[in-house]
Structures are given as C-alpha cells and as structure tokens.
Image (cartoon, rainbow, N blue to C red; front, side, top):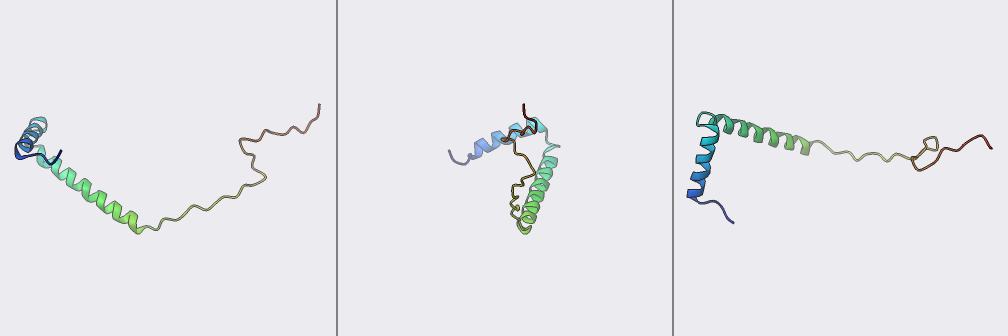
Length: 76
C-alpha cells in the first residue's frame, strides 16, 4: 500500500466536498492549521521545561499500610 494516486485523491476530495460543503472547507483547513501550530508550540514548551524526578517517600511507622491488620489493644 503506497500513496493514493491522482484519481483516488480526487475521489477523496469529492467526498469531503459532499460531506462538508465548499464553504466549510477553508474553515476546516484554518482550524486544522491552528491546531497543528498550537501542538508544535506546546511540544516546544514541554522540551524547554526541565522534568524533575519525584522524590522517594520513605515509609513511616505511623502510617499503616493496607496489608497490615489493626492490632487490638484489649485481650480476651
């Protein structure tokens, strides 16, 4: 499967015109262009931000884990 040929591109374009109408196509292209521009800008900002590694939290004796059962202080 390669790139679509000229005839296939014309058929695809014809379907797009039928679905959206000739007046809506420039608006769709403008919106798509703005979306791509915003995406590239955000990706550039993400690259500039330094990613920090999360600090390791040490286990505290005061915090009970889900695996431990509560100990009863009263004896039967």
